[in-house]
Length: 274
Image (cartoon, rainbow, N blue to C red; front, side, top):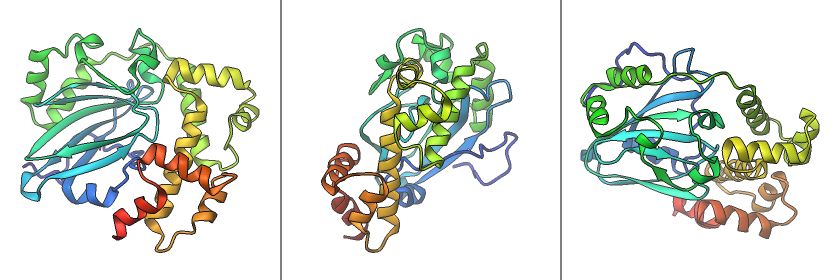
């Protein structure tokens, strides 16, 4: 296995946020993960390139994850390649044996510039690469996978041409970043007021560019913030967590949490302490 600690010619991505991983410590123990920043001409559309490696000597590992932002990922591996849209529920990825996956993570809304269909049609599914990128047929994928990590990323970069600039993509990403850092923006109405847009414009724009509404994003942010508090607290204050996240009742919080994470808050905590 290559030594991923050695210097490489690409610059690492600095903005990677693993908040969607429901077992981040377990992931770090079993999987090697590296991100690479895109070149300047692709930076408005691509958040980073990524490489995942795992070694069978560490044993089988299942990684439960929830997509924390409405991302689209291109991924290439010897087992399967494709384009993954936004999955709204929890997914569990298995790492068995040894392997490598190469990927491209598009900024929220940016895949809209590459995909001619409706973004909602990519929800909860994986489609074949040649549907969007003709170069990524079976022969093209084999040629990329035959190279080492850095050369493979360079080859993918060479195949990608940036589309025309789109100010709405920039605005969508600005709004997402604001929702994640400003606790006052906990409703669609609050975001609309802050940005001088109507609720209807925001919801329609998010559906057109992301395939989902802004309300989904706000709820997902709140629930993953709760998951982090639960992991980091020896004795979570269940009522306090629900109240701090804006829920009017603890039961409403429990219902929403389970719908996303697949377990109640107490069950989720027991997974780390039981």
